[in-house]
Structures are given as C-alpha cells and as structure tokens.
View 1 (tube, rainbow, N blue to C red):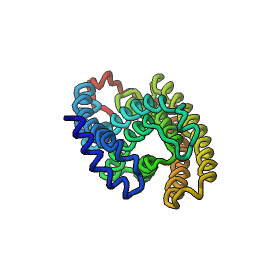
View 2: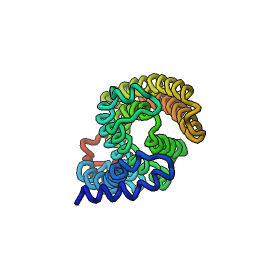
View 3: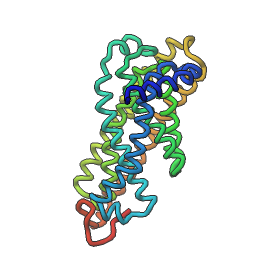
View 4: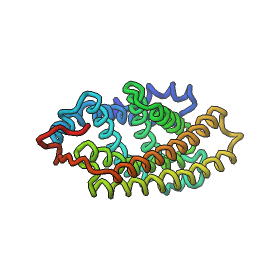
Length: 279
C-alpha cells in the first residue's frame, strides 16, 4: 500500500516536472513530500511535546513567539544532523565527479530531495513568522537551487554545499545554551570557538572554494545552460556567500561582547529552576 501511494505521488508530479524541465524531480516527489511533512511535524508537534517535558521552565514558561523560535531551532538541528550524515555518503560518487555540471546519482538525488522538502518548510516558516529578511532570502535561494538540481544540474555541488550544515549544529547548540541558563559558561565558550572555526572553514573558506569551482564549471557549459539557471545559481551563490560572511561577522561581534561581560548568573539544569528562564 505504501509503495502504491509513493508511485501515485510520483505519477502526479511527473507532468509538472516535465513542464518545468526538471524531469528527475518526479522520481523523488514522495521523498520531498515526506521530508516536508516530517519537518513540519518536528516543528509543530514533536518539539513542543518533548521540549515541554525536558525544559518545563526554559520552554514551558516561554511566550508563544519564543516557543516557536525554539521549535524552529529543533527542526533546524534535526535537519542538520540528518543531512550531514546523508551528504557524507555522496562526496565521492564517480558519476558526479566525472561530470560536475550534469552528472547524476540517485543517492545524491535522495539527499537533495530531503533538503528540498526541508527548504519548502523553511521558506514557508520564514515568511509566516517573519523575523529577518536574510532568513527569507536564504530559504528561497536554497529552495530554488536544490529544486532545480533535479534537471539534473550540478548535484555535485549541491551535496557539497549541504555540508555547510555542519556549522548549524554548533550554532543551534549555542542558542539552546542561551535559553537554558548557560550563557557565558565555559561549555558555551568552547562551543562558541568550535562554532566560529567550523563556520569559517566550512562556509567561508571551503564554501568560497566550491563557489569558485562552480563558476568555473558553469563557464565551461555556459552555452548548454538556460539563462534563468545562470541567474538563479549565479545570484544565489553570491547571495549565500555574502550572507555567510555577514553572519560570521555578527557571530564574532556577539561572542566577543558576551564573553567580555559578566555571566548573568541565572542557572537552569535541564530546564528546571526556581526562577524565570531568560528568553
């Protein structure tokens, strides 16, 4: 029965994929849908249920907006952990290495499908609960880049750029420490250092190298690529790299300010204390 449902979803998506020129997307339409539903459930159901039990003060006594921000971070952390594991299995696929522009492998397709489902959720969430235009641009750019990868187009680079999510793990841990009374702690300092190092080398250094390689590849097949693809991938690369450096500068400023000051002295252990949690 499950297999029949998956086939129906793929058959339903096939005409749309063909019309948009992204033929491979129908083969993974069920994975994209399942991914979107999964991260929606993590955000709306799993995170609230688990977090309220484990962190009755830090989460349980928080306001509606603060809870939603927490749930977003949980979904983001879950995605980062899943995608890093899956991406690690696709970094040395011969078919992608041999043709960086148009090479294809179903393992890479599966990873990109999971990411696409996540970025559909991320785009909707960034718009519905708007807080920063940078988050909206990031979500839309990633959704377009990974959605169009099913053409197929540059999945070689797609799986490599997903490895950026390694820094997201430490970023979210840092944020949760703030919300559970560990601001300014030695543990947060260590995590902050790892975050900066990981973010710098994975996103700013390795990411810049991958962007350069991408433009070299694009230049070699320029006459075979539709203009919208050149614009979306070219502008997307520049935008995402710019956001990486912007956020890196903000992280340095925030961490420097935080650890130059005094800890707030508020203690929370697993969300339990006798006062109010800092939100």
